[in-house]
Amino acid sequence: QVQLVESGGGLVQPGGSLRLSCAASGTLFSRYVMDWYRQAPGKERELVASMNSGGSTGYTDSVKGRFTISRDNAKNTVYLQMNSLKPEDTATYYCKIRSVLSGVEVWGQGTLVTVSS
Image (cartoon, rainbow, N blue to C red; front, side, top):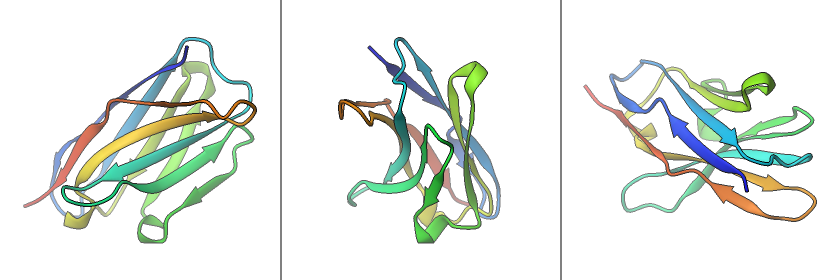
């Protein structure tokens, strides 16, 4: 069973940066898609960024040019580098891994990002 643990959230001023980490452990999927989602208070959870096992990435329009998803295969960790943060980026950020072959999904517990002066 795959387990995901996020870290790196916190309080940052507008214009600042944070890097979120999502460390995977257990029996990993051979082909997968790793997603970062976020959910702001009172809003639906939204997909922010994705990376598949081949390395292809995608971003929602509101974060393009500011956020970058990357991975370190040796550490089984996926990152979300967030630059030029805005108050509207405030949310709990979750990582999710989905097996392309079985469709099984595993979520992390979330990490809170607060952008405020």
